[in-house]
Every structure is written in structure tokens, then in C-alpha cells.
Image (cartoon, rainbow, N blue to C red; front, side, top):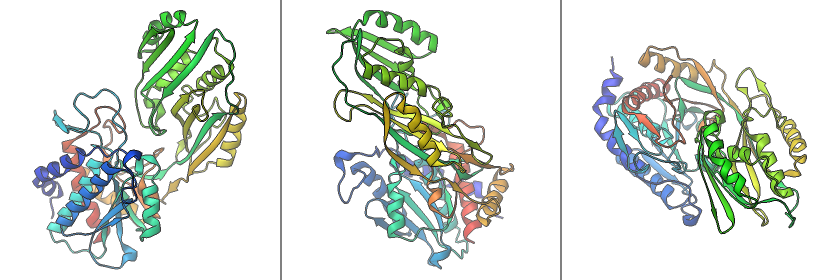
Length: 468
């Protein structure tokens, strides 16, 4: 009888050392350093190379697929039966105030703090060490196990689309990039960009909105917002402190050279769970909703107010739900206002139920934003994903989870998107345990070291169950 937990514990120091090296790489997508061989930028390429070098040292067969992704395979069996494990080495920007530097891993009270600790570098290393346990124990397998490392999970998943075009994607497997026990259904995505129908004109108004900026990615709840106003600004500056106190946010307002500058800090969260955060952009718009702006400024602020805390799209007319994945959610993640062409836009992500009709959603949203003199300039869609609960992959992973934890392997759904959808019968499997805080995309992101090792043991047991 194999003691999987003991095997994971025996590799604690090596695992933490290898994870530390990966976490120190600031693998945020960087257009400034992109090239043909490094399509996501230099830092992400460094992280991909790190994982391929690590797995090559383990004796796995590795391949870099044009810098978009890479894989490391154990076994040389029928490729049609290969088990896939899909993780990612890119991370979202480390916004907010951190207790320790986000790319200098720090262990405090049994928790490992760093950007990527839970999303997804920690779980990816855990899965790798799960395979390492199976390999080093010499357990007999009948199927290949292929670890695939993606580089663009946080910005559209172009990496896995490219990989699937160039390589044979496994049909069965898991993505260690969500929660335990298991996610068998993922919502789809409807991600529109809203823009004004016409360029702004110079008009007189009591207050002028000069600029507004909030948010970096649609899949993050904006943590900070900044607005610049001119005109009759003193009453707004004087009222801002009371507003912040009333709404339990922090903010600053100052007057400089005849302009008022407002900065508001909310709470970041994953864009698929907007109610878990405080959207700084729409909250600042709430403060500004009664200001006597020029027409373009007023339309922009009014539309943001329609989106404020409209977590399920009810105010903008796109609310829908189903019994599998629950209600649609909406996050305004990238918000900007300016006077040049293309400077004013609101980027949304709507996470849609499995049964959602995207055509209906688009038509209803167009009808709503038309009332603010806005239109949809473009839409990026992603289909939902669903694996029948009776599939062997689900039964195998449920067996592994139940044996290792003694807990019921309940099937879950998510509004987030994972690489699991690139496999015909792929599911998301860990690494955040039930009842534990999920800190992906937040400041002071962490994973508990005991949970990291527990996940490693589960992954080892799961890999053996799937590939034996």
C-alpha cells in the first residue's frame, strides 16, 4: 500500500526549492519584449524555459512549441490514450499593496506568499511532483502522461489554441487550476468592449471630466481608479472623504493647477466572481453620478453606474441562469475615458451559463448601451465546457480525492475558465481545498504549504489511477 502523503512529504524541500525558482520569475505578459520566439514576452519565455529544463532533468521528453507552450511527457504508449495535465506559467499583474514583494516568495505562518502561488505555479509544480512520485516509485503505467505548460492563460489562452493546432491535444485529463474536489462544468465567456458612438465635442458644462482610468484586465475586479476633473470641483473634493467613509473604501482627492484628481482604492478579485471584490472604477463613478458633466462625460459615468454592482446583469438586461452552472456574472474590468480616438472604452467579461444564448445576450446589451449613446465595438467569446458526470475520468479523480481526503468528491461548476476545456473530457482538479480562501488575482496571494503537499499526494494518486 503506497503512502502517497508520505511520498509527497519526503520531497517537500525539493518541491519548495523548485517552486521558489518559478515564483521569482515575473511572468506577466509584456508586449514590449515580445518576439517571434517569445510571443508573450521575455519573462514568460523564461518561466517556460525553466519548466522545460526542470522536466528534462527528470528524464521526461520535452518540447517547446514555438514559445506558446511546451510539454513534458512520461511514457511512450499509444498517443490516443495520453493523459493530459495542463497548467500555466503566466500570472496577472501584482497590483495592490503586498506585505512582502510579490516576486520574492515569503513563508509566514505556514503559508507561501507570492504572485502565482495558487494561480497557477504552485499547483503546476504540485502536479509535476505528483508525476515525479509515480516515476520514482517505478509504478507500471499503460498510458502516457503529458504535462503541458501554457503561457497565455490570463490573457485569452492563445497559447493552448496554438498548441492544439500544432500538436495532438490529449482527450482526457485535468487542469490543476481551480478548486477541489473537481470542476466538471465551466461557464462560457462573452467579453464585449463598449465604446461611444461618436467622438466628444467641446461643450460648456459646470464640471468637465478630463480623464478616467481603472483596471488592467477584464478578468480582474479593478482595485484602483483615477479621475481628473476641471470646473466647479471644490464641492466634489470636499464631499469625497465622507463618500469613502460611507462606502468603506479608501480614497484621496486634491486640487492642482485648477484640476481635481480623485483616486479610489477598492478590493481586487477574480473577474468571474465580481461580488467578491469592490470595483474601484464603478464605485468612483457612483461618487460622480450627480456631477454636472459635459454630455460625453455624463454618458460615460451614467453607464458605469448602470454597471455598478450589477453582478448578474439584471440592470443591463442580460441576466440568465441554468441548473448546471447558475447565473451569469458581469465584471467591468478595463475602464477608460479620454478625448482622443479609442481613449474611451469599457471592457466587460460576462461569464455565461452552459445553456446561454450569446446572440440574445449581445442583442439585449446593444439595446441597453444604445440608451447611453454607446455601442459594442468588438466581442471575444469562449464556449462553455461540460463533462458528463458518468465519464471514467471523473470517476477516477473522485476515487483519488476520496481516498486521500476521506471527503465526499462533490462535483462543482465555475465561472472561471481553465485549460480543461481544451480536452474533450478534461476537468479542473484543485488545488484550492474546500473551505479555504482563494486568493488568485489578489494582493498577498498565497498557498498553504500543507495544502500544497496534500495536493501533490492527490495528484500522484490521480495520475496513477488515470494512467495505470
